Image (cartoon, rainbow, N blue to C red; front, side):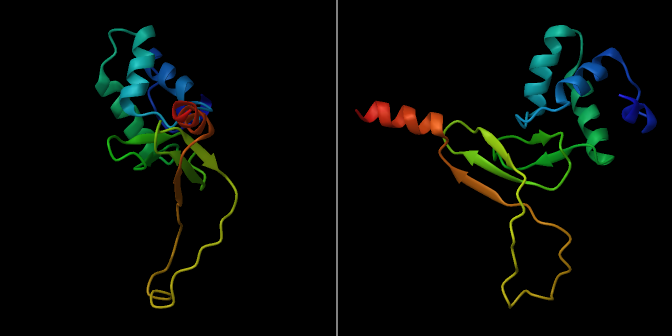
Length: 137
């Protein structure tokens, strides 16, 4: 929590609960998910507290905002470059930390200075595959 104190983040009990929930979280939660979980411990906490905390963390590079779900923004507390694999049935999202070599097509090669990339893979997770196969029997 010292890293958050050094960045000037006011560490209220509610914000500490949000930070603790995010620490090591690989579920890629939405602001609504975070609010729903943390407000159980702090029922008077506002949604604005969650949203503002996420905004500060994103602005300071401690959180990535993901657009992998067209219905809501999701947040990744791991700001290091990595890719994602998503189930189209249950929306489960898995981090892929392996380096994937990508190059631009020749017609775009050199027209942009590429500073990063993010690849999204879509498919059906093993649990959903089992459920589909069981339903077909």
